[in-house]
Length: 377
Image 1 (tube, helix red, strand yellow):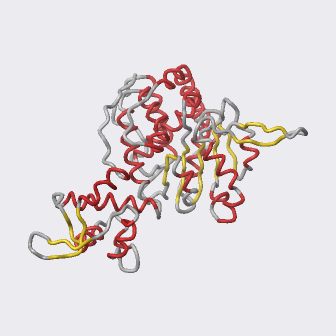
Image 2: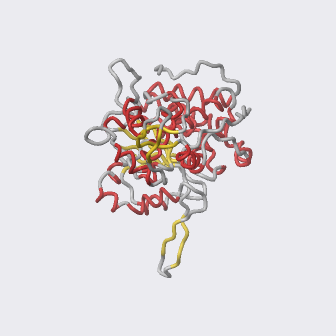
Image 3: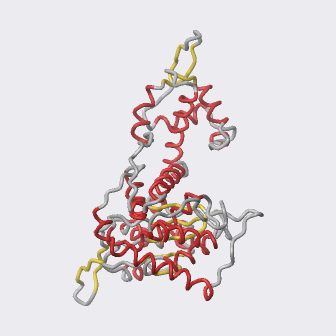
C-alpha cells in the first residue's frame, strides 16, 4: 500500500474526484490493512451523507488485536468527514436512542471493547447491542414507557454507526458491519502525524464537498438497485457503499465490488463456529477443483491437502492438525459423511463423494456470479 492512497486512474466526475481526495486524506494519516479496506472506509464515510436513502445502515467495525493499531486515529479522521458525527465512549443505550431522530446522526463509538469485551460487560450492555442490531434496518424502533402517564413511545434506531475496539465485536454486530481489521504499522510504514487544529479544516472541507455532491442525489440513490456481488445480509450492508460508487462513476464501481467481494469472503472464515464450517466447505471445493473435480477423494487425501494450505487454519486445528474425526464433525451438520469408496486403482478407502457436497456448496458458499457493473455518472 502506498502512503498517499492515490489511485492510479484519473477520476471521471466530480464525485469520483471527491472520493479520490477523501481516500488520499485517510491514507495520509492511517495505514489500512488493504487497498480494499481503504476503498471501503472511503465509501462508508460518503454513504453517511445519504442516510435518508438507505434501507439498511451499515456498521463500520474498526477492530484490531491490540493497542496502537490505528483504530482511534482512523475514527478521528472518520469523525471529521462523516455526516453529523455523534461520538461517544461508553454511552448508555438510553442516551444513544434519545439522540437518534428521523434525520439520524452518524454514531461513532470508541473503545467498544469496554462495552462488549467481557461477559459481564456484554450482559450489562445487552440493550445497546440490541439497539445497534435493530438500527441496521429502517423501521425497527425501540419502545419505551415514558412520562407520568406511562405512555409507550417509539424511538427510532436507524443510524449508521462506526465502532472501534480491541478484538471482535459481538457476532450480531459483526454480521451487520463492514469490518476493518487494523494492525500495527510495520517498521517501514510511515504516516503523517494528525493535529486537529491544523488538519481538521481540510477534512471538514472534504465533508462539506461530500454533502454538497450527495444530498441532491438522495432521490436518485433511493431508487437505485445496484447489481451486487454478494447476497443476503452482506448485500444489505454493502449496498449503500456500492450505490455511492455507482453515483461517482470512474473506477469506483469496479473497486467497490472488488472490496465487497474480497472483504466479505475473508470475514466468512473468521467466526470460530459457523465461519469455520463454511470455510471448510470452500476449502474442500478448492481441493476437488485442484484435482480436476474427481467423483470422490479419500479422507486421507483431503486431510493432507487441507493441512498443506498455509493460509488455512487446518494445520493448527487441534493438537496435531485437522483429524478425520475433526473433518467429520462440521460436515455432519450439512448431512455429509464419509463412506467406503472403491477408487479407480481398485483400492477401497474411506472418503467423500463430490456429489455429496453439491447441495451444501450451493446453499452456503455459492460461487459468486459475475454481475454487470454499472458505471454510474
